[in-house]
Length: 456
Image 1 (cartoon, rainbow, N blue to C red):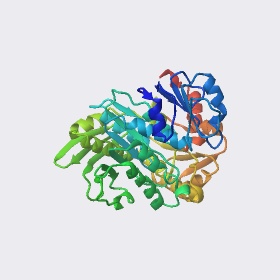
Image 2 (cartoon, one colour):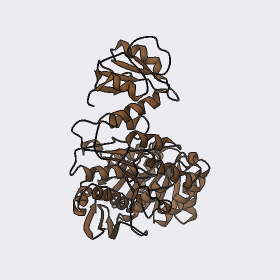
Image 3 (cartoon, rainbow, N blue to C red):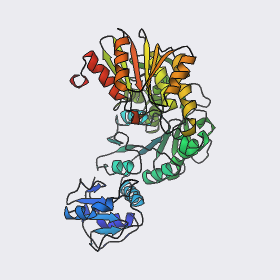
Image 4 (cartoon, rainbow, N blue to C red):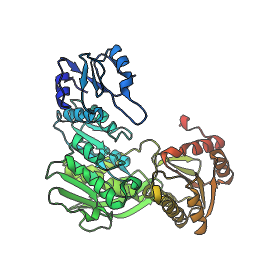
């Protein structure tokens, strides 16, 4: 980050200080401190960083933001709430940059959409983007503090579990362009209904100036209901009404999808190097951002072709004639359905779905898992292999719909079963919530096959 005065920092969080000088680093980690650092003592459910303030001061931190009495060291800036102060400081720092900010949220596909938007925007602008999934009230400020003088645009992902979280993040970022990828069922346990989820996602407008641009999925049943005269709305999709950006002639295989994009009088061929129809939607929203930022349709399509997936999000691994889809970063009913559709597009001999529990669904858990089991059977899986207590509902429903299915309580046993039943030319999907650590299954399988992913 560029240097910022301590006086300005105090003003950003409605406090005062007699301290002078500048800082060039903001940290919430007491282990990551130097003489140019401002430390913000956050209070979490299982920790209180105020316990480390004394140590941080001894390490030579230039200033510390606290909400509890910690003595009269002049380096301490007192505030009512350090979490709010972190957002206020991030907002003040963001205001120092007069560049386009793209903010995005959605029930599923945020990180992939962010990656595609970044691939488009970076074609013409030196762009900052959210790293990994740093999309919460600590991660977003951390991302914003990465802004440098040379940045010409920023793509910021916003996540949430409860109402008001997106609102606070949007007011911190002040997006000039907002994207809502979709409204599904993720976090429905906390938000009560899909109508509640829509309301929470639309909080992204709270930090935007009137007349700014909102880009939404026009095929999504909830987002299709959105009407506003206060913002420019651009809709993308395949089948919906009043779409400004549309995909036609879609063709998919294991390498990705091709389609023709239509926008006004423009049209161009697009290649998406990621499997599944859901990634066509991700590409469309990214191309809408490109158009809003002055790109031709073909320039935006060029950015999509350069997209590379992050982490364990639908990573394709090919071993001999087998195809493995490693999609273990997270899972909810919408992303499960999309991944099963993606598996269906791979033209291999047989398909195996290795599925784990979907967490945080509350009273909807059994119904959601049963829907996934039904979907797995409908997409023609040869076997559905599950791990976890909730996934037993997937197994049961898959069997009821005529699919071979088996539930496991031990990952090693599942990997061994898969190894013994896998044939040359089969395709396998691994998918589950992050807490299920489904990657342990495919890593065990790869070891049995004699494949070392670290050597590729």
